[in-house]
Image (cartoon, rainbow over all chains, first blue to last red; front, side):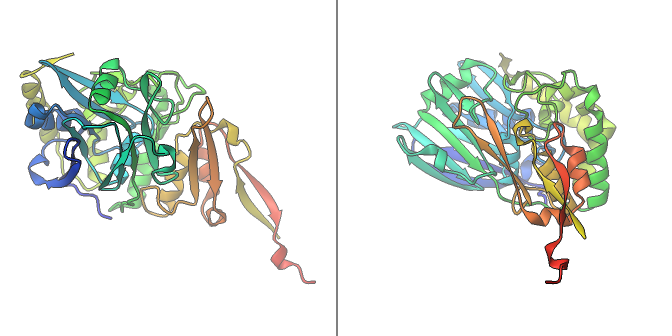
Length: 284
Length: 89
């Protein structure tokens, strides 16, 4: 499959009606992804109390682009969280840029997403048997909090509260699309160059479960992040790798090798738009 | 003649980063998880997260030295096995 560089695929799930739509939107082309995409979608859907999971153009394609943006609002505040694990690669390989959960289910529900198809499962099913082995991520309510793949968690209990309020007890997402790269050799070279820069991360190597696409296995991988670098979190990279993801030359090389046509000016314009959009909200 | 085989000898060290999966897929000029000769399966049934490394023999037609190199926890090793097809009975 060719990478969709000019459209973003938004999966909107109405929990109350148990319906869903995938909208391929060309009007979001100027928005890189992650925090920018989440914020734009939040501004569109805020009356329906959304929780938005979004990825960026580098997730699944480059090392350290290993987080998923999670955004939602409570009263007049916006929560800008990031979760690690394998979720971002599964969303990317499902060829989805953002998942928007709208409204509140009438009864407790598990949501299964396989590529761009959604199934609503009743509470009580054997949730672990759903999804594609080796290609799935599971977010599940365990005792008193949600865990991703039984280890990674959201950076604050508010995300747990909003998912619980929506009566979503679990989400399993599987992605089985493959993407072709325009210049595979150039891509492989750039990939390895970035992977070798792991010493520039502001976290030490550890022996813990790692996020997909990150070799570090750091002790902080399970905690998630709150706020942080706008560019890193648009891509959506790990904040511990923000020195890499704030290097505009490097980022543009990554985007260009995937077929995106962004320039330095496009990135600057995007960041300015994002700053302006952020001013309308109080970030927690 | 001895054949070089990729083995996940130290599977218990796997941290689930999937860099090996992405490496072999890059060698096959694609990005994704489908039809990968290496699969990482998460076992979440225990209290600690454990990963199973599943290897398809077709991986041995690829550059397996690069798989060894990309793994941050040295899960893999290359062993040499006699190729039985070459013996005449």
